[in-house]
Length: 177
Image (cartoon, rainbow, N blue to C red):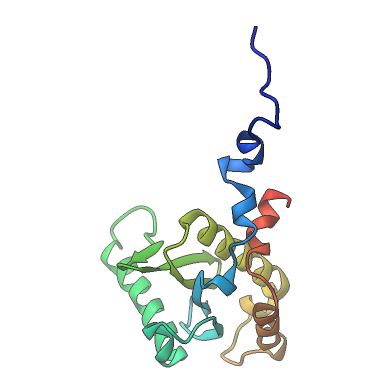
C-alpha cells in the first residue's frame, strides 16, 4: 500500500503547478527581469503599426524606428504567405530565432502582435503574448476591424497598461494564480 509522502519531507512535488512548472519561481519572472525587449501591435491588412512598447534599450532591435520594424515584420510574414500561395492553408510565421533572442508572432483577424524576447521560456512568452493579443483585441475589436489609417486615442492609451503592469499577469491568468 502506498502512502502520500509527508509534505514536510519535501514539498517539491506540491509546488508544481499546472503543466508541471515550479510556480514559486515563475512568480519572480516578469518583464522587469527583461523577458521582453519590445511588443508591437500591427494591423495585418495594412502593415500599419498601431502601438508598440519597448522594455529595454539594450537590444539593437529597439534602436531602430518602430514603424520600420513593424513594416518589415509584416512584410516578412506576407512574403512567407506569397511563397506558400499554392498550399491549402495559409502559412504564417510563428517565430524567428536568434542566438539569444526570438521574435514571436500571434494573430487574430486583422491584429498581429509581435514580441521580441530574450529566450527565457517559450511557453511563458507565447502565453503572455497570446493573452495580450486577446486583451487588446477584446478592448478594441471594432476599432481594429474598422481601422482606416488613423490610430484612435484609446488604442494609444493602452500603452499605459503596458508600461504600468507586470506582463507576467498575462501568464498567471491561465494558471488562476
